[in-house]
Image (cartoon, rainbow, N blue to C red; front, side, top):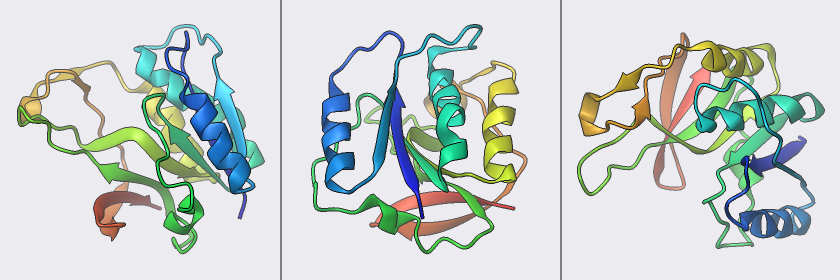
Length: 167
């Protein structure tokens, strides 16, 4: 299984790419920092979708890491999180944590995995075309509403709830 790691922002804000690159090199993974400027994004958060789409054809899976996500245990192998996922699973993300104010979003989009398959690429493309609607549901006024047209199953991964989309 080939896993590619990607992170980025335009303009770059943090130096987490050093942490990400060192982790990738230690585990024999490819890493790309995407600082490209993408035109006509609904919000800067959509940059991650474009960055993943830009490299997905070269890998079986792509892992996105937000700029504010850091590896702290360099011995942990992230490929173990997706290695045993059945072929019908094409997206894996953690459930969103609840903020101290009680707000939450459906999923934590700061770190996720997408399989290079028709369904995985379609999810990313469809997410880019979702109208920009602000949601105040669950007390989080800053989350963008997103309801993928896919079934999901929940499981646990490293004692953290996850959401997996399947075909």
